[in-house]
Length: 115
Image (cartoon, rainbow, N blue to C red):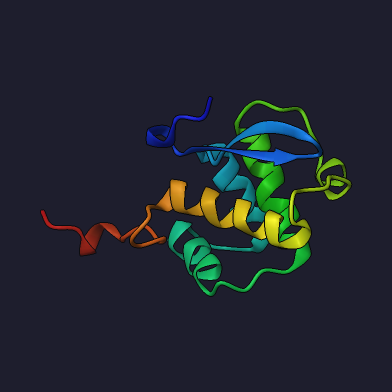
């Protein structure tokens, strides 16, 4: 069962209920994959709300690996999901919201946080 307080979500992918979480390692993987300099740049990229199919595969793959699955992006690309592409997009949006927060899906820079 997914623990939302730890940033975990659950989604049906490939006909199986799976747990996903973007750990620091998974976030570092995504920074490298998307050429983002830091978490703020990564969150800004996701904040646009525009995802390519490859983006969905990478985020879902990183989330599954963050939860402990030994799985490649090629394996993820072969999955099906309820409601097809829309189901994959909802999974990514839910995972990003669980990671970065519901109201503001991008982390604040240390300088912006009250001291």
